[in-house]
Amino acid sequence: MDRAQLLQPGLTCWRVENTHRLAPIVDAAAYFRLVRDALLRARHSVLFIGWEFDTRIKLDPSTPLPGLPDTLGAFLSALIDRRPGLRVRVLQWNLGLVGTLVRGTTPLYLLNWISRKRFDFRLDSAHPPGAAHHQKIVVIDDALAFCGGIDMTDDRWDTRAHKDDDPHRVRPSGRSYGAFHDVTMAVDGPAAKALGDLARERWRRATGEKVEPAASADPDLWPADLTPLLRDVDIGISRTQPPYQGEPGIREIERLYLAAIAAARRSIYIEGQYFAARCIGEAIADRLREADGPEIVVINSKRARGWVEEKAMGAARRRLLGYLRSADHHGRFRIYAPVTPAGAPIYVHAKVLVVDDRILRIGSANLNNRSMGFDTECDLAIDALGNEAMAETISQAVVAFRNELLAEHLGVRPQDVKAALQREKGSVIRSIEALRSRSGHKLVPLDIPDADPAPLSEGELLDPEQPEPLVVMLGHAIQDRLMRLRQ
View (tube, rainbow, N blue to C red):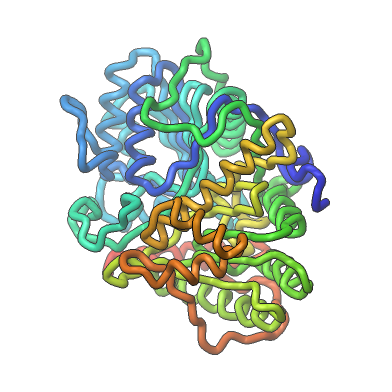
Protein backbone atom coordinates (compact mmCIF):
# COMPACT_ATOMS: atom_id res chain seq x y z
CA MET A 1 0.00 0.00 0.00
CA ASP A 2 3.07 2.28 -0.03
CA ARG A 3 1.96 4.46 -3.00
CA ALA A 4 -1.75 3.76 -2.76
CA GLN A 5 -4.19 6.19 -1.25
CA LEU A 6 -4.20 5.53 2.48
CA LEU A 7 -7.62 6.97 3.32
CA GLN A 8 -9.97 4.14 2.39
CA PRO A 9 -13.48 4.28 3.91
CA GLY A 10 -14.34 1.08 5.71
CA LEU A 11 -10.69 0.22 6.21
CA THR A 12 -8.47 3.06 7.44
CA CYS A 13 -11.21 5.63 7.92
CA TRP A 14 -14.94 6.04 8.40
CA ARG A 15 -15.55 8.78 5.83
CA VAL A 16 -13.56 11.08 3.56
CA GLU A 17 -15.07 14.56 3.36
CA ASN A 18 -14.05 17.92 1.95
CA THR A 19 -13.13 20.77 4.24
CA HIS A 20 -13.12 24.32 2.91
CA ARG A 21 -10.43 25.20 5.44
CA LEU A 22 -8.16 23.15 7.64
CA ALA A 23 -5.95 24.43 10.45
CA PRO A 24 -3.96 22.62 13.13
CA ILE A 25 -4.09 24.47 16.46
CA VAL A 26 -1.08 24.08 18.70
CA ASP A 27 -1.42 24.34 22.49
CA ALA A 28 -4.54 25.07 24.50
CA ALA A 29 -4.14 28.84 24.94
CA ALA A 30 -4.95 29.28 21.24
CA TYR A 31 -7.56 26.51 21.24
CA PHE A 32 -9.59 27.76 24.21
CA ARG A 33 -9.62 31.31 22.81
CA LEU A 34 -10.66 30.15 19.32
CA VAL A 35 -13.45 27.96 20.69
CA ARG A 36 -14.70 30.87 22.79
CA ASP A 37 -14.74 33.22 19.81
CA ALA A 38 -16.50 30.68 17.59
CA LEU A 39 -19.11 29.97 20.28
CA LEU A 40 -20.05 33.65 20.32
CA ARG A 41 -21.38 33.21 16.76
CA ALA A 42 -23.24 29.96 17.40
CA ARG A 43 -26.96 30.12 16.64
CA HIS A 44 -28.46 26.64 16.82
CA SER A 45 -26.40 23.80 18.23
CA VAL A 46 -23.18 23.17 20.11
CA LEU A 47 -22.00 19.64 20.89
CA PHE A 48 -19.07 18.99 23.21
CA ILE A 49 -17.86 15.38 23.19
CA GLY A 50 -15.01 14.75 25.60
CA TRP A 51 -13.09 12.78 28.17
CA GLU A 52 -13.32 15.41 30.92
CA PHE A 53 -14.57 18.98 31.34
CA ASP A 54 -13.95 21.52 34.09
CA THR A 55 -16.36 24.46 34.31
CA ARG A 56 -13.82 26.51 36.25
CA ILE A 57 -11.15 26.83 33.56
CA LYS A 58 -10.58 30.25 32.02
CA LEU A 59 -10.97 30.32 28.27
CA ASP A 60 -8.54 33.21 27.82
CA PRO A 61 -6.94 34.33 31.09
CA SER A 62 -4.75 36.91 29.35
CA THR A 63 -7.55 38.66 27.40
CA PRO A 64 -11.02 38.33 28.94
CA LEU A 65 -13.99 39.66 26.98
CA PRO A 66 -15.68 42.78 28.41
CA GLY A 67 -19.10 42.02 29.84
CA LEU A 68 -18.76 38.23 29.60
CA PRO A 69 -17.53 35.69 32.15
CA ASP A 70 -14.39 33.86 31.11
CA THR A 71 -14.80 30.57 32.97
CA LEU A 72 -16.26 27.78 30.87
CA GLY A 73 -19.41 27.08 32.89
CA ALA A 74 -20.44 30.71 33.39
CA PHE A 75 -19.61 31.50 29.77
CA LEU A 76 -21.90 28.73 28.49
CA SER A 77 -24.73 29.98 30.72
CA ALA A 78 -24.29 33.53 29.44
CA LEU A 79 -24.15 32.28 25.87
CA ILE A 80 -27.50 30.54 26.22
CA ASP A 81 -28.99 33.76 27.60
CA ARG A 82 -27.76 35.70 24.57
CA ARG A 83 -28.99 33.16 21.99
CA PRO A 84 -32.65 32.13 22.51
CA GLY A 85 -32.44 29.44 19.80
CA LEU A 86 -29.19 27.87 20.98
CA ARG A 87 -28.98 24.37 22.47
CA VAL A 88 -25.75 23.23 24.16
CA ARG A 89 -25.01 19.56 24.82
CA VAL A 90 -22.00 18.19 26.69
CA LEU A 91 -21.09 14.49 26.81
CA GLN A 92 -18.38 13.35 29.21
CA TRP A 93 -16.94 9.92 29.96
CA ASN A 94 -18.67 8.62 33.05
CA LEU A 95 -15.45 7.88 34.96
CA GLY A 96 -14.11 11.28 33.93
CA LEU A 97 -16.55 12.55 36.52
CA VAL A 98 -14.25 11.07 39.18
CA GLY A 99 -11.80 13.90 38.57
CA THR A 100 -14.57 16.46 38.87
CA LEU A 101 -15.78 15.04 42.17
CA VAL A 102 -12.33 14.64 43.68
CA ARG A 103 -11.64 18.31 43.02
CA GLY A 104 -14.42 19.06 45.48
CA THR A 105 -16.06 21.74 43.34
CA THR A 106 -19.44 22.10 41.64
CA PRO A 107 -19.53 19.50 38.83
CA LEU A 108 -20.57 20.55 35.37
CA TYR A 109 -23.78 18.55 35.48
CA LEU A 110 -25.14 20.85 38.22
CA LEU A 111 -25.63 23.44 35.49
CA ASN A 112 -28.66 21.37 34.51
CA TRP A 113 -30.25 22.51 37.78
CA ILE A 114 -28.90 26.03 38.17
CA SER A 115 -28.68 27.16 34.55
CA ARG A 116 -30.98 26.80 31.57
CA LYS A 117 -33.31 24.26 30.01
CA ARG A 118 -31.37 24.43 26.77
CA PHE A 119 -28.24 23.02 28.38
CA ASP A 120 -27.76 19.27 28.69
CA PHE A 121 -24.87 17.49 30.37
CA ARG A 122 -24.76 13.70 30.15
CA LEU A 123 -22.34 10.95 31.15
CA ASP A 124 -21.15 8.45 28.57
CA SER A 125 -21.14 4.88 29.88
CA ALA A 126 -21.82 3.22 26.51
CA HIS A 127 -18.63 1.18 26.50
CA PRO A 128 -17.35 -2.09 27.93
CA PRO A 129 -16.40 -2.15 31.63
CA GLY A 130 -13.06 -0.43 32.10
CA ALA A 131 -13.02 1.24 28.67
CA ALA A 132 -12.91 5.03 28.30
CA HIS A 133 -14.70 7.52 26.09
CA HIS A 134 -11.68 9.50 24.88
CA GLN A 135 -12.80 11.57 21.86
CA LYS A 136 -12.32 15.36 22.05
CA ILE A 137 -14.73 17.02 19.63
CA VAL A 138 -16.58 20.35 19.48
CA VAL A 139 -19.14 20.92 16.71
CA ILE A 140 -20.83 24.32 16.24
CA ASP A 141 -23.90 24.55 14.01
CA ASP A 142 -22.48 21.74 11.85
CA ALA A 143 -20.43 24.51 10.20
CA LEU A 144 -17.23 24.43 12.25
CA ALA A 145 -15.67 21.59 14.18
CA PHE A 146 -12.60 21.01 16.32
CA CYS A 147 -11.17 17.52 16.76
CA GLY A 148 -7.89 16.42 18.29
CA GLY A 149 -6.17 15.87 21.59
CA ILE A 150 -7.06 18.88 23.75
CA ASP A 151 -9.51 18.42 26.63
CA MET A 152 -11.41 21.43 27.96
CA THR A 153 -10.27 20.82 31.50
CA ASP A 154 -7.62 21.94 33.99
CA ASP A 155 -3.85 21.56 33.57
CA ARG A 156 -4.14 22.07 29.79
CA TRP A 157 -3.79 25.81 29.14
CA ASP A 158 -0.37 26.88 27.90
CA THR A 159 1.12 29.02 25.14
CA ARG A 160 3.61 27.92 22.53
CA ALA A 161 6.31 29.80 24.44
CA HIS A 162 6.00 27.33 27.36
CA LYS A 163 7.46 29.90 29.73
CA ASP A 164 8.97 28.58 32.92
CA ASP A 165 6.97 30.97 35.13
CA ASP A 166 3.83 31.81 33.16
CA PRO A 167 1.47 33.42 35.72
CA HIS A 168 -1.59 32.24 33.78
CA ARG A 169 -0.60 28.56 33.92
CA VAL A 170 -2.47 27.84 37.14
CA ARG A 171 -5.25 25.50 38.15
CA PRO A 172 -8.62 26.93 39.21
CA SER A 173 -7.43 26.31 42.77
CA GLY A 174 -4.59 28.77 42.18
CA ARG A 175 -1.80 26.19 42.18
CA SER A 176 0.62 26.30 39.26
CA TYR A 177 1.38 23.36 36.97
CA GLY A 178 4.11 22.58 34.45
CA ALA A 179 4.41 23.36 30.76
CA PHE A 180 1.95 21.46 28.56
CA HIS A 181 2.04 20.78 24.80
CA ASP A 182 -1.02 19.72 22.80
CA VAL A 183 -2.54 19.84 19.30
CA THR A 184 -6.01 19.80 17.75
CA MET A 185 -7.51 20.52 14.32
CA ALA A 186 -10.20 22.88 13.00
CA VAL A 187 -12.27 22.02 9.91
CA ASP A 188 -15.41 23.39 8.28
CA GLY A 189 -17.73 22.53 5.41
CA PRO A 190 -18.80 18.89 4.86
CA ALA A 191 -16.06 17.65 7.21
CA ALA A 192 -17.59 19.64 10.08
CA LYS A 193 -21.02 18.25 9.22
CA ALA A 194 -19.60 14.72 9.26
CA LEU A 195 -18.11 15.29 12.73
CA GLY A 196 -21.55 16.54 13.75
CA ASP A 197 -23.01 13.23 12.56
CA LEU A 198 -20.37 11.35 14.57
CA ALA A 199 -21.03 13.43 17.70
CA ARG A 200 -24.80 12.99 17.43
CA GLU A 201 -24.41 9.23 17.05
CA ARG A 202 -22.21 9.13 20.14
CA TRP A 203 -24.83 11.17 22.01
CA ARG A 204 -27.55 8.72 20.90
CA ARG A 205 -25.53 5.72 22.03
CA ALA A 206 -24.85 7.28 25.43
CA THR A 207 -28.26 8.82 26.14
CA GLY A 208 -30.80 7.16 23.84
CA GLU A 209 -31.78 10.60 22.53
CA LYS A 210 -31.71 11.27 18.80
CA VAL A 211 -30.52 14.78 18.01
CA GLU A 212 -31.38 16.33 14.66
CA PRO A 213 -28.71 18.14 12.63
CA ALA A 214 -28.41 21.88 13.08
CA ALA A 215 -31.00 23.80 11.06
CA SER A 216 -28.68 26.43 9.66
CA ALA A 217 -27.77 28.00 6.34
CA ASP A 218 -24.15 26.87 6.65
CA PRO A 219 -22.92 30.04 8.36
CA ASP A 220 -19.27 31.00 8.16
CA LEU A 221 -18.02 30.51 11.71
CA TRP A 222 -14.31 30.26 10.91
CA PRO A 223 -12.35 32.38 13.42
CA ALA A 224 -10.98 35.53 11.78
CA ASP A 225 -7.50 35.12 13.27
CA LEU A 226 -7.08 31.41 12.44
CA THR A 227 -5.02 31.10 9.27
CA PRO A 228 -5.86 27.91 7.33
CA LEU A 229 -2.99 25.57 6.61
CA LEU A 230 -4.91 24.24 3.60
CA ARG A 231 -8.11 25.00 1.68
CA ASP A 232 -10.54 22.73 -0.15
CA VAL A 233 -8.93 19.39 0.64
CA ASP A 234 -10.34 15.96 1.45
CA ILE A 235 -9.83 14.73 4.98
CA GLY A 236 -10.32 11.29 6.46
CA ILE A 237 -12.14 10.72 9.75
CA SER A 238 -10.91 7.59 11.53
CA ARG A 239 -12.27 5.94 14.67
CA THR A 240 -11.61 3.43 17.38
CA GLN A 241 -14.66 1.89 19.01
CA PRO A 242 -14.69 -1.25 21.15
CA PRO A 243 -17.21 -4.05 20.61
CA TYR A 244 -20.29 -3.28 22.71
CA GLN A 245 -23.83 -4.68 23.02
CA GLY A 246 -23.62 -6.71 19.83
CA GLU A 247 -21.98 -3.96 17.77
CA PRO A 248 -18.63 -4.95 16.24
CA GLY A 249 -15.48 -3.13 17.18
CA ILE A 250 -13.92 -0.49 14.92
CA ARG A 251 -10.14 -0.28 14.47
CA GLU A 252 -9.75 2.25 11.66
CA ILE A 253 -7.10 4.24 13.54
CA GLU A 254 -4.93 1.19 14.08
CA ARG A 255 -5.15 0.29 10.38
CA LEU A 256 -4.34 3.87 9.38
CA TYR A 257 -1.25 3.91 11.61
CA LEU A 258 0.00 0.61 10.27
CA ALA A 259 -0.61 1.63 6.66
CA ALA A 260 1.11 4.98 7.17
CA ILE A 261 4.17 3.38 8.80
CA ALA A 262 4.40 0.88 5.94
CA ALA A 263 4.10 3.69 3.36
CA ALA A 264 6.90 5.85 4.80
CA ARG A 265 9.90 6.34 2.54
CA ARG A 266 12.11 8.91 4.29
CA SER A 267 10.77 9.89 7.71
CA ILE A 268 8.14 9.24 10.37
CA TYR A 269 7.58 11.98 12.94
CA ILE A 270 5.46 11.19 16.01
CA GLU A 271 4.30 13.28 18.96
CA GLY A 272 2.55 11.27 21.64
CA GLN A 273 1.50 11.22 25.26
CA TYR A 274 2.49 7.56 25.47
CA PHE A 275 4.64 5.23 23.43
CA ALA A 276 3.42 1.76 24.29
CA ALA A 277 1.22 0.25 21.55
CA ARG A 278 2.38 -3.26 20.77
CA CYS A 279 1.18 -3.32 17.15
CA ILE A 280 2.78 0.06 16.41
CA GLY A 281 6.05 -1.01 18.02
CA GLU A 282 6.20 -4.15 15.92
CA ALA A 283 5.48 -2.17 12.73
CA ILE A 284 8.20 0.37 13.53
CA ALA A 285 10.69 -2.41 14.32
CA ASP A 286 10.04 -3.97 10.92
CA ARG A 287 10.91 -0.66 9.21
CA LEU A 288 14.04 -0.19 11.34
CA ARG A 289 15.37 -3.58 10.27
CA GLU A 290 15.26 -2.55 6.61
CA ALA A 291 18.54 -1.40 5.12
CA ASP A 292 16.96 1.66 3.46
CA GLY A 293 13.94 2.30 5.70
CA PRO A 294 12.78 5.68 7.02
CA GLU A 295 14.13 7.68 9.94
CA ILE A 296 11.76 7.60 12.92
CA VAL A 297 11.60 10.44 15.47
CA VAL A 298 9.34 10.31 18.53
CA ILE A 299 8.61 13.30 20.78
CA ASN A 300 7.50 12.04 24.19
CA SER A 301 7.31 13.30 27.77
CA LYS A 302 10.14 12.51 30.17
CA ARG A 303 7.63 10.68 32.31
CA ALA A 304 3.88 10.16 32.56
CA ARG A 305 1.78 12.36 34.85
CA GLY A 306 0.99 10.71 38.13
CA TRP A 307 2.28 7.57 39.78
CA VAL A 308 -0.33 5.26 38.29
CA GLU A 309 0.26 6.37 34.69
CA GLU A 310 4.03 6.16 35.07
CA LYS A 311 3.77 2.69 36.54
CA ALA A 312 1.76 1.44 33.56
CA MET A 313 2.92 3.53 30.61
CA GLY A 314 6.51 3.97 31.80
CA ALA A 315 7.02 0.24 32.10
CA ALA A 316 5.43 -0.38 28.71
CA ARG A 317 7.62 2.31 27.11
CA ARG A 318 10.78 0.75 28.56
CA ARG A 319 9.89 -2.60 27.03
CA LEU A 320 9.02 -1.04 23.68
CA LEU A 321 12.22 1.02 23.52
CA GLY A 322 14.34 -2.00 24.34
CA TYR A 323 12.65 -3.91 21.56
CA LEU A 324 13.14 -1.07 19.05
CA ARG A 325 16.78 -0.52 19.95
CA SER A 326 17.48 -4.18 19.31
CA ALA A 327 15.89 -3.76 15.86
CA ASP A 328 17.59 -0.42 15.01
CA HIS A 329 20.55 -1.90 13.17
CA HIS A 330 21.11 1.25 11.09
CA GLY A 331 20.74 4.00 13.74
CA ARG A 332 17.54 5.51 12.36
CA PHE A 333 15.46 5.75 15.57
CA ARG A 334 15.47 8.63 18.07
CA ILE A 335 13.17 9.54 20.95
CA TYR A 336 13.35 12.99 22.54
CA ALA A 337 11.69 14.82 25.41
CA PRO A 338 11.07 18.60 25.18
CA VAL A 339 12.16 20.87 28.04
CA THR A 340 11.77 24.58 28.80
CA PRO A 341 14.67 27.06 28.66
CA ALA A 342 15.31 26.34 32.36
CA GLY A 343 15.29 22.60 31.73
CA ALA A 344 11.87 21.82 33.20
CA PRO A 345 9.95 19.04 31.42
CA ILE A 346 7.21 19.96 28.97
CA TYR A 347 4.40 17.42 29.15
CA VAL A 348 3.48 16.11 25.70
CA HIS A 349 -0.22 15.41 25.35
CA ALA A 350 -0.36 15.84 21.54
CA LYS A 351 -1.19 12.93 19.26
CA VAL A 352 0.45 13.75 15.90
CA LEU A 353 1.79 11.65 13.04
CA VAL A 354 3.64 13.09 10.02
CA VAL A 355 4.91 10.72 7.32
CA ASP A 356 7.33 12.16 4.73
CA ASP A 357 5.75 15.13 2.96
CA ARG A 358 2.58 13.15 2.48
CA ILE A 359 0.51 12.35 5.57
CA LEU A 360 -0.62 14.46 8.52
CA ARG A 361 -2.74 12.89 11.25
CA ILE A 362 -4.02 14.67 14.38
CA GLY A 363 -6.47 13.17 16.83
CA SER A 364 -7.31 11.80 20.25
CA ALA A 365 -5.73 8.35 19.89
CA ASN A 366 -2.63 7.67 21.96
CA LEU A 367 0.09 5.24 20.98
CA ASN A 368 -1.03 2.68 23.52
CA ASN A 369 -3.05 -0.50 23.29
CA ARG A 370 -6.23 1.09 24.64
CA SER A 371 -6.46 3.62 21.83
CA MET A 372 -6.02 0.99 19.14
CA GLY A 373 -9.10 -1.05 20.05
CA PHE A 374 -10.48 -0.50 23.54
CA ASP A 375 -11.38 3.19 24.00
CA THR A 376 -13.46 5.45 21.74
CA GLU A 377 -11.21 7.71 19.66
CA CYS A 378 -11.44 10.04 16.66
CA ASP A 379 -8.57 11.17 14.41
CA LEU A 380 -8.38 13.39 11.32
CA ALA A 381 -5.87 12.77 8.52
CA ILE A 382 -4.89 14.15 5.13
CA ASP A 383 -2.97 12.29 2.45
CA ALA A 384 -1.36 14.16 -0.44
CA LEU A 385 -1.88 11.13 -2.69
CA GLY A 386 -5.61 11.29 -2.01
CA ASN A 387 -5.78 14.92 -3.20
CA GLU A 388 -4.08 14.65 -6.60
CA ALA A 389 -4.93 18.14 -7.82
CA MET A 390 -3.35 19.65 -4.68
CA ALA A 391 -0.66 17.08 -3.97
CA GLU A 392 2.25 19.53 -4.14
CA THR A 393 0.46 22.15 -2.02
CA ILE A 394 -0.42 19.55 0.60
CA SER A 395 3.11 18.17 0.63
CA GLN A 396 4.53 21.62 1.31
CA ALA A 397 1.96 22.25 4.05
CA VAL A 398 2.63 18.92 5.78
CA VAL A 399 6.37 19.59 5.91
CA ALA A 400 5.83 23.19 7.01
CA PHE A 401 3.67 22.10 9.93
CA ARG A 402 6.15 19.44 11.05
CA ASN A 403 8.95 22.00 10.87
CA GLU A 404 6.83 24.42 12.90
CA LEU A 405 6.42 21.82 15.64
CA LEU A 406 10.15 21.09 15.64
CA ALA A 407 10.90 24.81 15.80
CA GLU A 408 8.69 25.15 18.87
CA HIS A 409 10.45 22.29 20.62
CA LEU A 410 13.94 23.46 19.63
CA GLY A 411 13.38 27.14 20.39
CA VAL A 412 14.30 28.22 16.86
CA ARG A 413 12.45 29.62 13.86
CA PRO A 414 10.75 27.35 11.29
CA GLN A 415 13.12 28.71 8.65
CA ASP A 416 16.03 27.52 10.80
CA VAL A 417 14.60 24.00 10.73
CA LYS A 418 14.10 24.22 6.97
CA ALA A 419 17.69 25.40 6.47
CA ALA A 420 19.03 22.60 8.68
CA LEU A 421 17.09 20.03 6.68
CA GLN A 422 18.58 21.39 3.47
CA ARG A 423 22.11 21.21 4.91
CA GLU A 424 21.52 17.69 6.22
CA LYS A 425 20.00 16.48 2.95
CA GLY A 426 16.56 15.91 4.45
CA SER A 427 17.65 14.00 7.55
CA VAL A 428 15.33 14.93 10.40
CA ILE A 429 17.59 13.29 12.99
CA ARG A 430 20.74 15.09 11.89
CA SER A 431 18.82 18.38 11.69
CA ILE A 432 17.56 18.00 15.26
CA GLU A 433 21.04 17.14 16.48
CA ALA A 434 22.46 20.21 14.74
CA LEU A 435 19.86 22.54 16.31
CA ARG A 436 19.15 21.16 19.74
CA SER A 437 22.37 22.43 21.36
CA ARG A 438 21.28 26.06 20.98
CA SER A 439 20.02 28.02 23.98
CA GLY A 440 16.36 28.17 24.93
CA HIS A 441 13.96 25.27 24.45
CA LYS A 442 15.61 21.95 23.82
CA LEU A 443 14.92 18.41 22.77
CA VAL A 444 16.71 16.07 25.14
CA PRO A 445 17.42 12.47 24.13
CA LEU A 446 15.22 10.26 26.25
CA ASP A 447 17.51 7.84 28.01
CA ILE A 448 15.50 4.93 29.40
CA PRO A 449 17.65 2.62 31.53
CA ASP A 450 17.01 -1.09 31.85
CA ALA A 451 15.17 -1.28 28.53
CA ASP A 452 14.36 -4.93 27.90
CA PRO A 453 14.88 -6.08 24.29
CA ALA A 454 12.54 -9.06 24.75
CA PRO A 455 9.63 -9.50 22.29
CA LEU A 456 6.53 -7.49 23.13
CA SER A 457 3.64 -9.13 24.95
CA GLU A 458 -0.03 -8.33 25.23
CA GLY A 459 -1.05 -5.24 27.19
CA GLU A 460 -1.01 -5.38 30.96
CA LEU A 461 -3.65 -4.35 33.42
CA LEU A 462 -3.57 -0.57 32.93
CA ASP A 463 -3.13 -0.65 29.14
CA PRO A 464 -5.24 -3.63 28.13
CA GLU A 465 -6.01 -5.02 24.73
CA GLN A 466 -9.13 -6.51 26.33
CA PRO A 467 -11.58 -5.17 28.97
CA GLU A 468 -10.53 -4.95 32.60
CA PRO A 469 -12.71 -4.99 35.75
CA LEU A 470 -14.62 -1.75 36.33
CA VAL A 471 -13.70 -1.61 40.00
CA VAL A 472 -10.01 -1.74 39.10
CA MET A 473 -10.38 1.07 36.58
CA LEU A 474 -12.30 3.21 39.07
CA GLY A 475 -9.70 2.68 41.75
CA HIS A 476 -6.87 3.69 39.44
CA ALA A 477 -8.75 6.81 38.31
CA ILE A 478 -9.30 7.99 41.87
CA GLN A 479 -5.74 7.20 42.93
CA ASP A 480 -4.20 9.01 39.98
CA ARG A 481 -6.35 12.13 40.50
CA LEU A 482 -5.42 12.28 44.17
CA MET A 483 -1.73 11.98 43.29
CA ARG A 484 -2.06 14.84 40.79
CA LEU A 485 -3.76 17.09 43.31
CA ARG A 486 -0.89 16.57 45.72
CA GLN A 487 1.69 17.68 43.16
